Length: 126
Image (tube, rainbow, N blue to C red; front, side, top):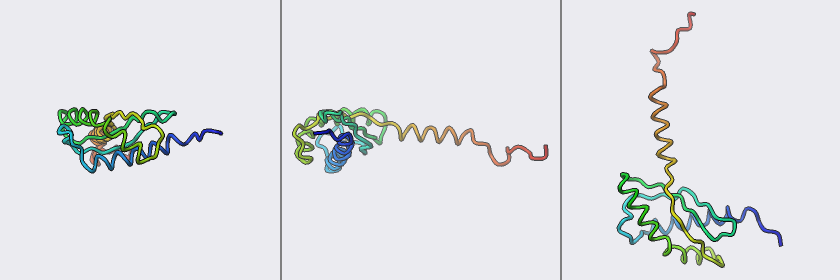
């Protein structure tokens, strides 16, 4: 039987939805204080591990604390995610901070700071 090459992508999306729902329902770890958004999931080809990318709103200290709390919560999410998706083996879950939103905001601010103002426009008269 041929393997479906797109299955890890489909499972990753389903895992993303399950973890987002679990986090929205509340996490009991007191370190998870900031607003957490699940931005994506990468699954291994054998579906044995899932790297969950999260964007965390808050100060750097709150972000670090929240990420520690999420890492501590990961083993508790493994069973419910595996059962919800009816997987033979529940994937090991690892959380990684996705700072692409913050990076994009920084790039936007840098571009805005170098953008010429209308009165600085070059003269067309030659």
